[in-house]
Each structure stands twice: as C-alpha cells, then as structure tokens.
Length: 309
Image (cartoon, rainbow, N blue to C red; front, side, top):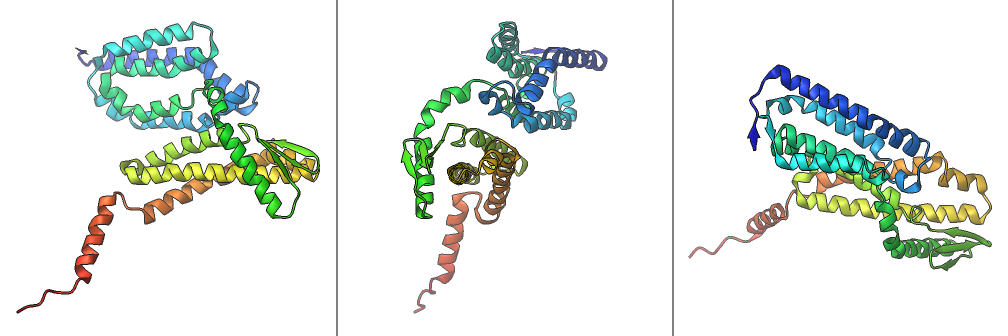
C-alpha cells in the first residue's frame, strides 16, 4: 500500500474531477438504463429484470452521501487491485459490447474506491456498491431461464389443479394451460423470475435497513419467505390470468398481464415482505442459542425441588 499525505484542497479537487468524469462517462448510460429500458421498456425483457434499479441506484447514492463524513476521515491509500479494476473497466467500456459496458460501471466504482481509500473505503461503501452491482443489467436472466423449467411446470400444474378444483375444465400440458380452447403459456417471466429478482433485491434492502442481517437465523427465514411469497404469488397470478383468458375477458387479461394491474399485484407482493420482516422481528429469536437458554430456564423452573433429608 502507498500512503498519501492528506491535503484538503487537492483532495477535494481530485474527488470533484473524479465525479465529473463519472458523470460524463456513465450519465448517458444510466439514462439509457432508466428511460429506455425500465420506463419505456424499449431494450429487452432481460433488461426489465433489473428495473428494481430505479429504486436501488438512487438509494445507493443516498447511502454514499450519508457516509461522506466517515469517508473523509479515512486515510488516503492507493491499493494495487484498484488499478487492476480500473484497467479492466476501461477495456470493458471501450469494447462496444453492451454487457461489458454495463459491467464496467460497478468495476469502475470498485477501482476508484480502492485507489482513493484502499480496502477501508471499499468496506465502507460495500453495501451501496452491492446495490449497484445487482442493478446492473446483464444477460444473467437469459442464462438462468433454461433452468427454471421445473418451476414453470410446477406453477402450471398447481394453477390447473386450483381451477379444476373450482369446477372449471382445464388441461395442463407441460407449461401450457388450456381452458375453453384458450391457451396460456407459463413463460419464464410469467413464472415469476422477474418478480423473484425484484423481491430478493428488496429483501436485501430490508435486511440492511432493519439490521436483520445481524442474525443468520432471521435472515435465512426471511429469504425463504421471500421465495415462498414469490412462488405462491405467481401461482395465483397465473391462475387468474388463465381464468381471464379462458373466459375471453381480454381487457382484464391485458390489465393484469401488461398494464398497471401487474404493477399493483407486484406492489402487494412487495408489501407482504414488510409484513414478513415485522413477524420475524416479533416472533423469531436472533439465534437458536437464545431458544435453548430459554427452554433450559423454563425446565429448571418447572422441575420439583430435591428432597431434603
């Protein structure tokens, strides 16, 4: 490591120049992500899987701003790995490959943190950086989609079973549901992959915001709950969509499938995560050791006293 003597005026000049360069290099890219991809949805379905970045990236910037006093108290240090990250980010940015250009953003930020403050700076800004990393659009959903075919079959089977139990004639063929000669496909995004991405991202924010991450037990239960809510919610959604499509309720189908009805449904599912957090904080102990100690205390209190001869 190389220690740099702190001088206030040059330090502010370096940070201002760094922020200006970042704004010039990545301002248009972020605008492209948000406006073209997440708001107008003109890029690709895979890009929409990262639309939680509309909330996550501003939150990351806010957390960085809140930590600015602690940041300035750190000793200026240049770490060699930061230079490596900057070099890789430069190569990615100039490659012209969209995924590489996207990935250059978190790589550039990581390199700057290590070059300015060393590992201590990276540790301080780790969570905001994680929010940006998981908001960076890549082809990861496209690579995952072939592996969620069993989930698609499961959702189609359960949705068909629910409708059949309600007295409707439904045929289930692999990932397809047929009702009144109307066919509905449980596609990967309809199987909740996008919603699962968003739910896990929001869960990450909630675990940080509520300090839930300090307990491995609570964190594990919470993320199991997230996956359960996502799967159950998408079973119900596909059941409703099949009912609408099977009864030629076209307006209702498009409202829930492509219009703001889907946004309302997603908001309800995300609201359920807040209820799960509150329930976990109220009813789940921080560790299993706490339960063991409490049980031991209860047993000793309830056991009869020894005979005194």
